[in-house]
Amino acid sequence: MTKIASKPTTQTSAPAKSNTGTGTTKTTPKSDPIKSGAADTAKISKEASGAGASSGVGGLISGLMNWGGYEGEDTAKGAKEVAKPLELDKGQTLRSGASGDKVTQLQEMLNSKGAKIDVDGKFGPKTMEALKKFQGDNELKADGVVGSNTLGKLNGAEGAQKPADAQGADQPKPVDQAQGGDGRFGNTREALDKLPGPLQKYADVFQAAGEKYGVDPRFLAAISMHETGNGTSSAFRNKNNAMGISGKGGPKHISSVERSIELMAQTLAKKDGYYKGKNTIGAIGKTYAPSGAANDPTGLNAYWAGGVAKNYKMFGGDPLGQVVFR
Image 1 (cartoon, rainbow, N blue to C red):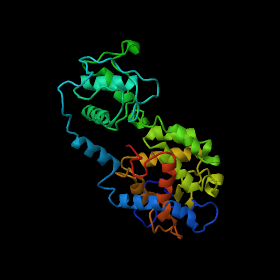
Image 2: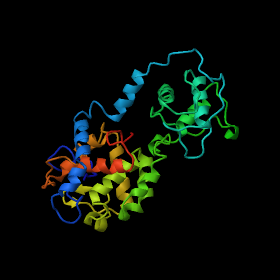
Image 3: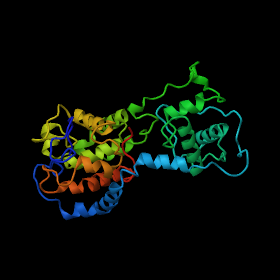
Image 4: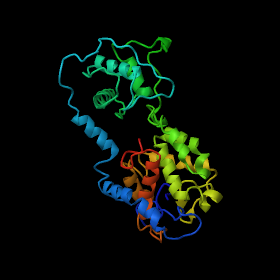
């Protein structure tokens, strides 16, 4: 559990977490839930120890630095000097594993901008590398996903034709990065249907808050499941506290469940806040639920990262990957 305040008030350097994740009673966790998350806990703990040097952002930067171009023919099969513009439906994205005509168009556009990849209609590793390089060269987030911002650069760059329905616009209006830009979370909403009953009706709230602040909605949902005992805790039922937000007196009363979710997303995303430089579950856990905190007498904070990682994995997320994009 974490606090939303200008300064931590516990004796630790990070906001302390109170024991709301197990409901209304303070008991030690049963062996089965702990064992079920043991593997993830071990991986997360190992990852957390090096979080400062190997965050998701660092991984993306490293990948770009290691990109060395392509060997082979000067002109890849199917490349065109002027490629047909790529058009996507509202909210649609293209990412690794996709195939079809739109991927073919993407490959042709990348080749028209200097890449040398086969135009086979399959979004594989080579297409991913070429796309990330294009994104990096155009000051976009190099996440390997074609969303609104990347599409605008692809279709608005010099030498590319404009879509027929552009109606004279210079290029599609980019999505504000603070709103989860570039369609990063376009495919996460369906996964939130797996939320347990009491939290299920807030699926759209998790999605909207994540998109607004650049926090994976599945991560927000995973935290809520852990902190509220799948929606059964007293803090959730009586204080509208869906995220384990606490102060000196324990769980805080929030005006609404929706507000508690947005507050937590905003706090996680703040560039100079508690979670500055922390983008993965393991790294965030050290601040969100620090071991040895004054208001964690039973030591349950030690299981926070593993529990949240288990929930996040259930939603289809990579427990070791980046979950906050500032």
